[in-house]
Image 1 (cartoon, rainbow, N blue to C red):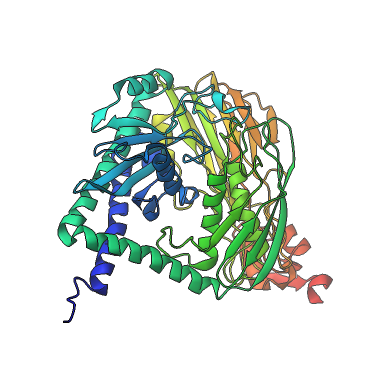
Image 2: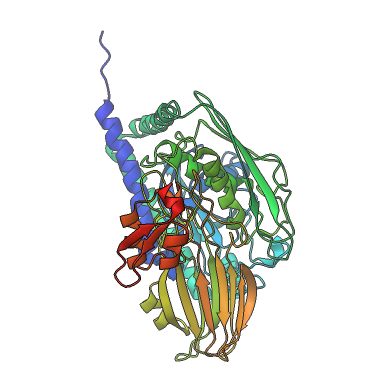
Length: 578
């Protein structure tokens, strides 16, 4: 007797795409209901679904640095509440433990919600968002001079925010009493709850429509399909072991630099990134957890294999990440981690640097790398209310085979995010923005030149403001390759109202600002690709005419002599003529 097929490949694909759509709807729900500009403007958050085992099914991303972190949150939830009956419908768990499921720093608060159908745990809804405030010794909660986690804010060690749908009000009261802007933090928390409930509702509707068995089989199909796609792309890569070494500037407390390294081994079915031998964890807050390292490596793994792939845990099954215990890449309690991204992103960049020479069609030269984050606080000049700016900065990306680098883009860890618009900043905060322009310093020269950094200048409108900033790659520049020159550094300069100039520097904590003082945030130009003397003379002339390089740089670096008035090519230097 012929067995009747319950569903076919088309149904599996429809359900698979529906799961992806649920992740996107969760993402937009959170963005539209949040209270903080760093969420609804910058998009510093992620949301998605996992299966009942914590395997990632779909993730809507603002920042790429969160790729895969939802998995670790859910798995820590299962470790703690995995016994029969410990998780119930209506539960919501809150977690920001950096050394486990939280994975980044305390400001990135995660919520996890189990999804039940017919009494069975079938999936999890999860999200992770940067709260403007979680308490701690400094406004904005992250800083550059903390020495242990206890200085960095409230810790949520995988505990229930909701128990069977009932709010844990004492926990909410504790949050409100310990953060400087409770309306923002609690408003963002409720936005996250709304997004989780959206995910739960849509997943249950999917089970109603197609049946639980079909949805479960579609999940298995989704994960296997992701693995197959990854293996197919790995087969196209050069095989062997590729190495890179670099240095992290410092830890914010004057210690450093710190050597970091990787060996990338590519076989027919594995992509192994071995960071052993990198510097041990340090006193200052640049340490990152193993979870953060894995997320960074996942980002560059996608770039190398299939950048357009919808992510799930199946995609990452061939990827292996190895690090020493208690290293700067796998810090353990109570190490300070509030500016973890300064190290985390080196995890991606080292793999990038190791592989760029052998797959230049996929990987460009080095870019600004650092988030170049700031926390600027004070009192608004009109409302006399306290304000807090927490935002990343854009900068230059590296050139590559056949193309110049992109200008004014966020680093690999921020991905498809934004900064706070000038109009919003001047309305909500006690600052004026004197300048927002491209940094045209001529660095990153090559046959294809690196993209420009940016300059963003904040003028304080009141006394008593402070700024904390962390601009990594201040001492060790974005790297060029194949004959291209290195880019320029990230830096901060303070211009006092009396004309005194302080800086440039890469990190500061609570630097005092008074009315009329200007903070100039200057980000790096990306690295170049190829010999600058091979850049077509007409392109050099165009660059000079449009202000990307000077007449002198055209001659000294590119070997092209230009008319200073018309920018027409008048000749070539002897080095160029060779």
